[in-house]
Image (cartoon, rainbow, N blue to C red; front, side):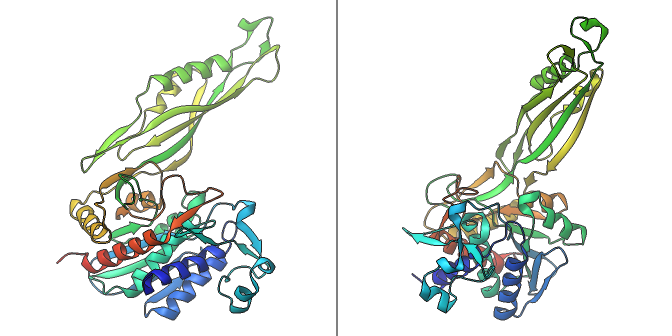
Length: 383
């Protein structure tokens, strides 16, 4: 194993061990401290908990972007410090988190196991090392956000505060999308719009149904409208991106002998760049209102040159031949793209790894991502 691969593993272990599902401050402090200690960059942590660093000069900026929050760990992914091997406790090799509790980090068959290894502290560690080691072609930016798992809280706050790199590589998963043992380049991903259809009627005794207005019937009419709508679709740099549209919940009525006066339907729509299903059409039905509860934006890379440069960097970092692909999940790249940053997604996580009780990441793929990020930072912007 090379020295750099050892660094990737060591830094990933350190970051993963720090709890960050409820409070990201300890993880943010560790990232900030590492950047201050190992780089000459201008480093800051904002009031939201986001960590930023900048180095290099030029009119064009490239950001290496990740997040240091995670979803709640499985109980098997937690441990108290007293559970650590004595030698580790004495050396402090696996710590950095809460003095009483931390996340477990295990290793077997060339993979690291633990909450956040795949999503996405492993790729974050790779980005930190690439940021440190690169001789950037322009201004190189590092950003790690809080609250990605809560709908992009940190990214949205940073954008509101003026964070606006020209280009960004977001380190979410892109490995094994187009083939085995390859890290691809995501040039588009879906968003998610969650909405509610609220149907109102007039209650009446069930023995005299015509005396009321049945909210369930109105909701069913609205569901029929949804079923007749086409799911959104788009093409990004030749890559097809298919959305989806589905009713997921329905609730209405209070008693078996009462005509219901209210009924609520929830709709899950996976959006695509530039397209939305015409869900507002349900409001043509009497007594029906439509409300958007969540709208995570999709992402499309609209600069072919940057997409090709990212693919070339990924190709140089591995033996396999990577491809441009689309991703089914929303990421912080959606918020950045919506604000004007040209994005791609390249990261170590594989389909099915994130948020699982046995979440893991390949150490070799982390090293691959480090090489990819480093190469792109040194080649982009192209002269």
